[in-house]
Image 1 (cartoon, each protein chain N blue to C red):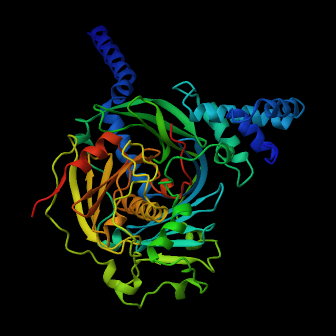
Image 2: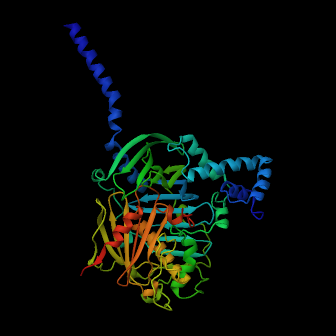
Image 3: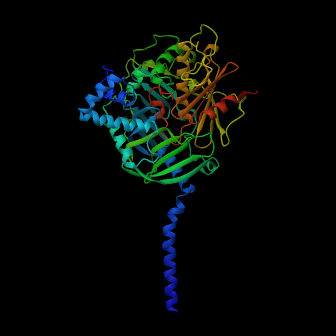
Length: 329
Length: 205
């Protein structure tokens, strides 16, 4: 009896040991990768951090410094280029200020929260399974921190793939690469140093540039910060599977004399913006395709309206969306 | 190439931009200078990384080394692209952030004036109290009616007749759209504003 009991205990111990050995392998699956993606999305937005990262796109390598703060649901961020011209973007809850020191220009756009639109929340990562494969590809060490390597592989040609490295401790994104349909990196970001803080002094978000003599372009009047009634007659008839319109708004932006209708489509990871505006004159219309890093843009004229489609998706996707736009009152 | 700094000359060499004679001169100098040899090695690694010639899986040590070396460069030196900007026409649109370049021209076109620069401090230059129409950026009436093309176009249907101011206007609006896209539809998988701050036209391949 005692011997049987000892055998049972031994069997239990072996089973427990087996479970311990096997469980990490099971966790390295699709579900775990999506867990890390959600954790990363949350961390990038809600942590307080300062760091330096390298941004690579096309033939260019640039170094940038970021200060990011989150307080009571409000995001503050300052991003400044450390190489070449000290270009700078400063975000707070009201405005987004872009400073171009060489050209002495400041462009001020209203922030998302100013329009009453809440900050982005993680998409339903379960729904992403239909269009992407997720897997944990191992571990790496970036900026002195251990991180999980996550591969997100598109199942069709309408979206890019991603390789991410997410800090194991904080969930912070330490490295990201967007991969084209041939699995070649087209845009990469990698931190070289990163420090997390409980709190960041407000002065760290302030521009150190002397802006005297700069020319400002802004949508300054109070009225223009309000959303206008969007034109619901604009329809997108054809979009890749998994994409859906998540927002429609109409507002004034700094570079347009006329209000611009902004339609946002997303599949949960990739986003596409459609901007529609009627220029003052037909000569201001432009058309064609262009690209910068992972971003593709497609423009066309629709009955005197300028339609511009912009997104971190392959050319085929912005083209498909842009060509299918119609106005059906 | 003789007007370039040593660093730029090495970069030109790495990018195969130098003429044969200049290459020989530079290589002779390079052989006798340890710093330049190290720079040569760094630029090759960076170029290969950018052109996707490195192995798919790069070991952690490698990426740390490359990035540490990029950061070691003196401020203001963009290691791979400085020579290119002299020697190759930049076909690509500076869509990302080239607001730095295009906004100057583009916004000046949009305002209908080339002398809009203001010298007053910030608080005075932002016209908070002016009427909406005055505050708006107003387009200059065009000289003729035609449809332009996107700068950096990759399609065959290029309207070569488009005037520079038209291209500038398109650039300015595109960059404004980029900023608005980034703010309202931010990417979850990168530092979204890197594209806005990132500078300069890309070499289209």
